[in-house]
Image 1 (tube, rainbow, N blue to C red):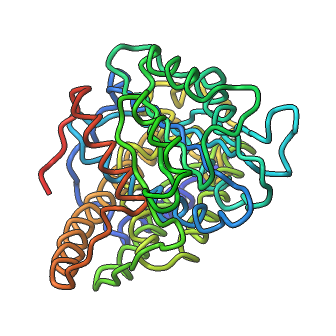
Image 2 (cartoon, rainbow, N blue to C red):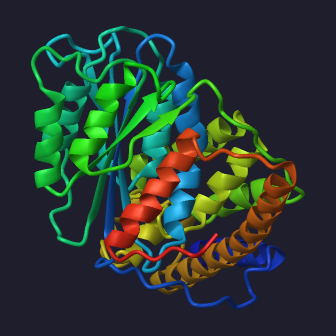
Length: 383
């Protein structure tokens, strides 16, 4: 028994020595309480993955975390669920009109990002009506009156190709169910193929947008990127995986860091900011589960805990969780401050260069989120 106590004491000491070295001992502001009644934003992204649309996928990969960060600025802070659908891909079922729900509506943004990086562009039958039908009828939309429910559908061919599902009918059905369909035509707004996309926007009561999906726009390197990347890696150490699912989730978190890194420092910085926001949620992390009231330390099966925590007494586990929670809060505050400086730097750089990305994929998304969010009581800071 004495040997067991000694081993446990060494384990606890090691945990807290590490905490001291990392600066965990300095008190931080109390973490924000989890509020299950936060307003909901449900966002379905429908992407054309037919031939020649790989650059549209790249644009989505680049912009997902920027979209998250835009919503994180809203007051009150919403809960975000994202779904990903693809259409026009020859690998999908003919019976389903070459449409696939890649990810249902979920708060697990890493799982959506994972699917984005697994997608390839291949095919030719682009049935806008069918993908809209899959989004309208196949997703578990929030039913509350205050929920903001958006469907973004992007493609580069006519929207009226579907021989079975009339895009006009399904767009009107979406509107009747308080779903806002946003049409993004990948091409010149003056092209004949754009007319059917303009019809989608007209019926939905939303704004039509035409983008050059082949141009991803310039990204701005800043003096804050390296430190944000380091903080992004550091905050991962505050996650406590529960069981096998937790191990897989933690591995995927690191993999999505690598995927962001493959797109450059700007995307890494954007993902770091998103990871520090209340919109970044996991269902495999002990701290998140405790904060959301889904479990308690007393209720947890010990086998679900990582090995170092199994050696701790119940009181020691409580202290350990408190320290990790404070550490995550501190890192989040550092990331938020650097992100503010980075946004200001990028804004000044863009103004100096006279750049205009108002017609880019990401800009269209963010503009619509702000405009439609205000209609649902979400307030965004002035830019």
